[in-house]
Image (tube, rainbow, N blue to C red; front, side):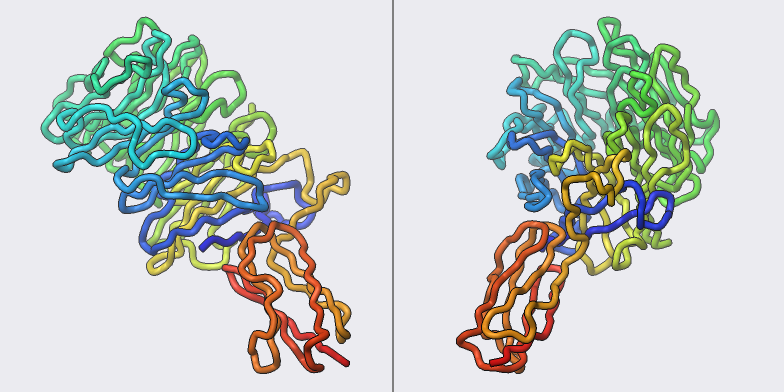
Length: 520
């Protein structure tokens, strides 16, 4: 079942009336089952089917991978399952096979509980079977982590990078050259720096030009599982022809172990160019989700890069993603998800990029703005690209109402800060914000009347005529998918007796009915 919830969300809790445009829910994707963690990971993958609308991947337990195709608002987003064996970790690989369509990869189960890297070539239709499997049963003997495609060593060919770790082996990063000779052979292995004990290395990976030299750099983490006297670290390797196995810089939250700073760097995120200076930026998370000790460090890239954070954000939010330019002002934006179950807190905080970006959220989307009890609202957030084709980036917030309810993904449209919602100069009429069934006219009538109703988005609807006993006597719209906007249906009651009748509009989220009178 799929339905749409339209919502006016005020910037900084101001009233909705008369505001400049802000985020509006344009589609709601609902899982088929409860307790599925639908939307536990959401990854944009560009335009997979060449229709001009960006698409994305999502995942739910156990090992269900979906491709969701964007489209016009009146038709909504269409998701289909493409794999039952891929785990929750996957990522955009850019264009591996050189056909101009973004490809993507993930971790796929292998015999004996082992895992392998699976690469899928973009485009539709997609095969259930991956196009390419990398490694063998001995290459990934335990945990394997996200994969990305970028040119780190400056040889002109991007690399697929994967974390390689289990309790018996010293951890490393595995590099596969994404070129015409791509095969299952590991082309380069980057070992974790020597230490007193075996750390978790490469659990988070991101790439970008952070030192401003024109080459893609590598950022990864090294966690020490709360070893006394040892601090978690984030390691930076400058890319280019001089790339080697030694980190060029490390970022440390605390030089001594402190439980408050556990998991420093467990989540890393590329932020695009958040401050608009022309250089790539990134974010480091630390602390435990849902705690006041959960904070993020934002580092601005550039030729003067140092290990001191430029912005510190402490908003209890564990999930952080690049949102894209969701307010159409020319700057990349940051979205963070704040989700806890024990306190029934659920938020998505948006930090709008620009020269004056700071640690105060510019838009707060709270679970209380929705009908229902969403105590996992914000457990995953993600920028999606332009899924509705209006030229502005969109984003997603995943949620659940708690035990016994299905998991959902709310799709929000980006907005234009230069245009007001009720701008009289806007030539496009505003779409309805609710399902609405108007009173028929004329009423009473003989023999014809017009029934009007409004839909906030494309949906399967039925329109029926019932007699005073509640029996259906006519079906005017029978489970038909209609577009967003206002609709009119003419009913000819020539063959029906005088009396009181009901007309009923039914849609997945509910139904509405009104009385009318045939007078002959």
